[in-house]
Length: 378
Ligand SMILES: Cc1cc2nc3c(=O)[nH]c(=O)nc-3n(C[C@H](O)[C@H](O)[C@H](O)COP(=O)(O)OP(=O)(O)OC[C@H]3O[C@@H](n4cnc5c(N)ncnc54)[C@H](O)[C@@H]3O)c2cc1C
Image 1 (spheres, rainbow, N blue to C red):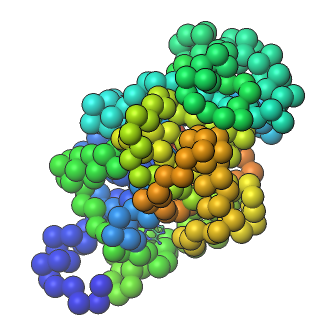
Image 2 (tube, rainbow, N blue to C red):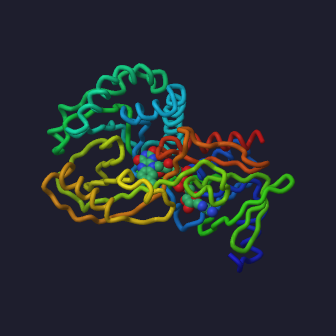
Image 3 (cartoon, protein in one colour):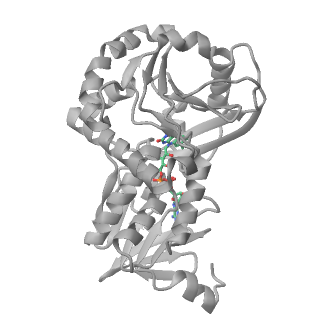
């Protein structure tokens, strides 16, 4: 970044009205919506890594808004009004994303999501079963129908799962192709006149009178408005934010002939999740094995989590089989003390849209929209 030409400065970096730091789902949707709401604004997205390197290209592609045990836990933590608020934000965010890119482009499949309970989860399963009616009624005004959750235990044998005693379905849950989604967002951003630069780590933000200085390794830019969309990494630039990183580890098997696992699957209160991608199984989770070790922004795989994922694969998902693992990776989510994302102006002309609490596939486009709206008013 310290060998930039006149041309590079003029064409790519100088004179941005809005600089967005972070090129994940939230940053890119905020950029697109800013172009809609402020059509004359020059919008520049600065992404640190060659590809977005937090959560948006690392996730499992569940288009989910909460299984019953998650809803119960979140309602207990934040209260009913807060729960309804975040479920609405997830559902509307997903609708916004689907409208922006189209179901075909992102391979959105409304196949349903399934929550699995082990024999030792019997008490929890019974509580969740008893709450089907309650959550169907509570969420009906948000989802638009009252038959969202239902009993699905009878379908377990057809899926070939072992060690699962109870299964509940969320009929409004879906899945999508994370890679195609992010590729489509990038293409759309460039087509809409947004400049997206990768390999541009922002080192410091400095609000000044009427603008914010953006310090890169070398050049310094100045923009009328800056949006921080750096999710788990946000405290590197604004230390006071209530954002705690949570690393998620994922693996994908070799292709498995005859595999048929339609839908998205949540296991052990959502701490594990799996689905079929092509003919392979994608499986992730295990953060709860060591919360402290996984509260990091550093990429990495640990034997403890990887071994547990493999155990789950061999014992529950593909009982008795030992498929080769073709891909392993980690990504980082952002959590905090409240359920809601943080979307606000933290200093004059410096905005943040961060903390999707692990459900940014659904929530992200709504956060991007709200941030763009806030900046258009500012
Ligand atoms: C393993 C895993 C599985 C998940 N599965 C699901 C799922 O199935 N469904 C679901 O809804 N959600 C899921 N999530 C969560 C979801 O992916 C996130 O909530 C969402 O992608 C957050 O988007 P974001 O744009 O806020 O953050 P990110 O995608 O993390 O983007 C932030 C970007 O900021 C960049 N950045 C950071 N610091 C700087 C800097 N100083 N300068 C420039 N750029 C910087 C980073 O490189 C990163 O690309 C999962 C997450 C993980 C990690």
